[in-house]
Image (cartoon, rainbow, N blue to C red; front, side):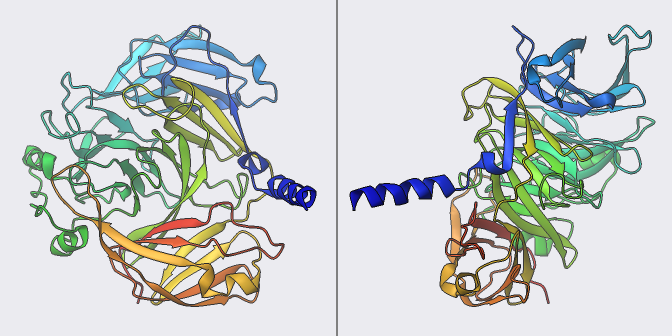
Length: 479
């Protein structure tokens, strides 16, 4: 009997899903002796990749896509930059978002070194505070760069336009676009071209979250409200302390609630870079979903979004882990199906064994059994799976569990989970193709995060879910 038990245990381990079954994470060798705390990544022609470091260097890497990473080479292109957190390459030049400005850097004489440095826009303020970061996007459809400006010390607004999102046009004009920002960790666009950023837990942020930068919107933190008068803009909302986001945003329509809240500690705790998958399946079945970096837990999370009653909302799922430092920038090459991640642990400790890292991830071609999407209905949620389910388990309400909660909207740092509820799953209806399940639920709570566990669900081949949890932010219940 003991021998049989060992055989069964060995078989179970042999068939347990491992990340390496689906995604191959590899470290890209860095220049020897250099401090490569990577702050931004840009894709270049001929499969070259550029990175900036937090210490102000810009390097160009050759061979980062290759099958033999020992052949990677590096060349320093520029130095003396001011902690760039945003970069892209266009028409032979680099465009960088640094703490004090958006810059254009170019090699005009062809020697492989930057020789022209042009300030495109520097219309926001900066002082010596360590936390006055500026995160910049790639260009939108109009060519504008979106920049989110961290508060001074992440608490106050002591320099002009801190706590705001601004757009920088190709001709260098700065357009104040959204107020209410606290401490960004990254910025990017969804497949529809709408801008989003990651804001971190803190004052007026009960937990970290993905927020939609709808032009003219207020994002929740009133510290930078005073700067509206600099451009003769309407004053942002004067929100109430010790309230709830739902309460305040129903009073102030310009207050756009977080699209997806990442419960603190459960789904990371310092979200950063954003990348959108429009590769048509080159990284798995996550088309139009967002990948979000995580600094403290050294992970990448996965987000599916939908729009209900004019507001974005959706679910976050755990995805990739095991990176060797805390991820800051994330860049996904939709043409090649390769994800690049850069990391640093300076300022905030992170999982992993190294103080900085540059890594890539490729899909092996094998798809994990996962909840592909979670979408809201008037009476529950629909789960779409990556492969057919076993109707006996997926159609049994006992295979699922759900709890719901929210956070205090307050001037204090963070918040405990409050207003707990236990929605009851009354039915689970499997679709004819066995690829989706409609959960009927009593007790949905508008404005709450709904945590779903699907540990009892098996695939048609008796496989278990790679990740069985989802957290859906229910801003609106569909009609």
